[in-house]
Length: 360
Image 1 (tube, rainbow, N blue to C red):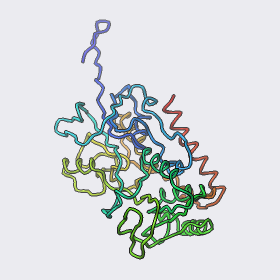
Image 2 (tube, one colour):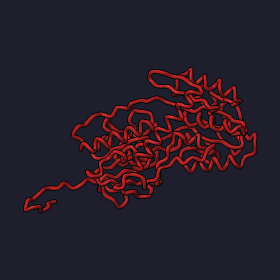
Image 3 (cartoon, rainbow, N blue to C red):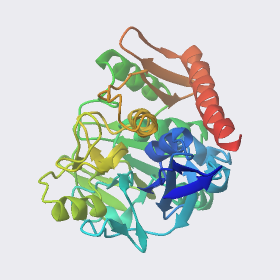
Image 4 (cartoon, rainbow, N blue to C red):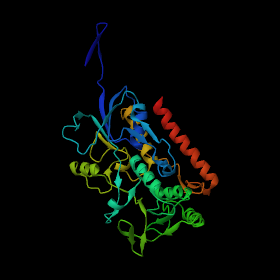
């Protein structure tokens, strides 16, 4: 394109079009840092808000606003409220929009492991709508109702801790592993077990759930009755990721395979970040957010100074109930009330940083 100015022909480079699919941790990192003076950016998502998921489990006992509206993002980014279930890679087209670059950040799905009854007889905790349904159900239950929390990873552990603070329910912690928060140091897991025992949490470890009925569940060891069951059993590849892999002839049942630069395998203009990407890193908010920022900076440099993505692990933290948390990083580990206050400060800082950057 040529523009005539002072009788001189000046070349002006057309801005390339970037389409992002999904509005989660990876995409918010991307849109906060992308230079929209260099690119036209369109974000397509079924949700018009970003959800601060690390506090989702604790929010079953609160009414905090954990969302940031798409309207508070970069004013030059076009938001499209829609669901994507297919992509025309031959025409570089999503819905009715064309792209030069495509960024896949649509996340993952709840993993039920094809266990009969999980889908219909349990609540899940992955979205804002899920947390609202759980809170509404909890408000309907009488005191001393039996609540089964199935899966004692990070989300399940924090949910158990939060529900225990309500001091209204009989809680059952159920997991096929031999201890909770299996990604933490064993001594910290044992601390969780000790603290849960002190607040009368009923624990069923090494219990693999085989079937869930309307008011009972069967494990490899016993049958447990409940008034409400919440499934925290993990995540799996989404249907859109399966479609992408099929169309691009990629064979991976854990996600969309990417290289060290977040490029989808064998693709130069398609990227995947966050939980939908199979990158070798754990599917956590921390990883996703860093990947989004990394990729935005690569775009801003027009890929002239390409550096491989390296995850900077800032540690793991989990609320376990009774105003106590556990924390570990590469250098230290611990748990207790002081870690709980540290936990609160971390979330206040992280959410505040995201909110302020989006707002201003």
